[in-house]
Amino acid sequence: MARSRTDNLNIAVLLPCYNEAATIGPVVRGFRTTLPDAAIHVYDNNSTDGTALQAMLAGAHVVRERRQGKGHVVRRMFADIEADIYIIADGDGTYTPDDAEELVRTLLTERADMVVGTRRGVHDDAGRQGHALGNRLFNLLYRTIFGPDFTDIFSGYRAFSRRFVKSFPAVSGGFEIETEMSVHASRLKLPVSELELDYGRRPEGSHSKLSTFRDGAKILWMFAMLMKETRPFAFFSAISATFMLASLGFMAPVLAEYFQTGLVSRMPTWVLSTALMMISFMLFTAGVILDSVARARAEQLRIHYIGLETPSAMKTPLSHAAPVSRAGRGKADAA
Image 1 (tube, helix red, strand yellow):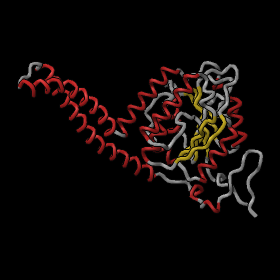
Image 2 (spheres, one colour):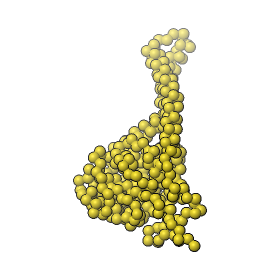
Image 3 (cartoon, one colour):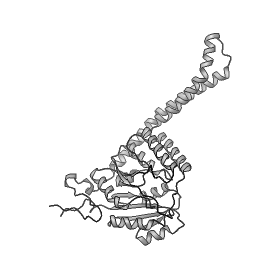
Image 4 (cartoon, one colour):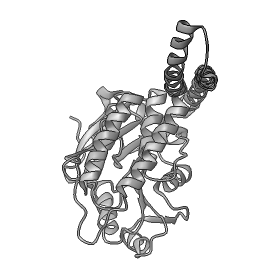
């Protein structure tokens, strides 16, 4: 009888929640059925509808996080909880707990540090058309800026290794935390994988907390900040080019007049164009210097990541590993 590779691993299911009393009970019970040995942690983010009580009645460990925002909750979870494998999902019932076992299996067989459960059909049913359009645009923007590692950066259903969780310097406070996770993996060139999963609809009585324009603006700002921190040369070069084009636009007619008459009659315009050109050069220089700083910071993060211990059960050669079974099918047996 071969033992599953998960037998010697501590698995933690993390469920950040805000006013999800209508759904959190079935979600917790679903994860307890799929992963009976896993610890289920629900972090209640100032709910007013009895979410914490429903989670406790379902058998979850409940902690309250007073700072409002999903990013604050995830940062607290990652700091507090010790495990070998982490699974994070939403408490609204849109992600199926039955898929958790497949996420774990993929994490182990691919030897990945993060597996993203991409949402099948999310562009067709994202709650509102604004959300669907935003998903497309932001995913395209992410691939343009940070690389083609991910196709659904906003998925809230993910599995992580301990090395990822304990090396992730979460700084965002809201729903943009998923974007930050993706950038962290791309920045350190961590092994990641994607797994297409079904994405359900919220049941009656459960309401989305997302605001199309407010949260979209926050995510766009996070994109800019993450680009500044991780790709400063590209960030400052783009701004430098903008100032240079403006400078050349103001400078061109003044130079044309000078070559024709030998005079500079519009001196303020010439001074402005010269100032803009100097700012452009300064921004470019700042980008060059900060790019070296960003590389050094990435190297330090990488060294910290490598220094974290990997559980021996996750180092088992793939040829000797029994597959993780689906719930209800039983564990695989060896001849």
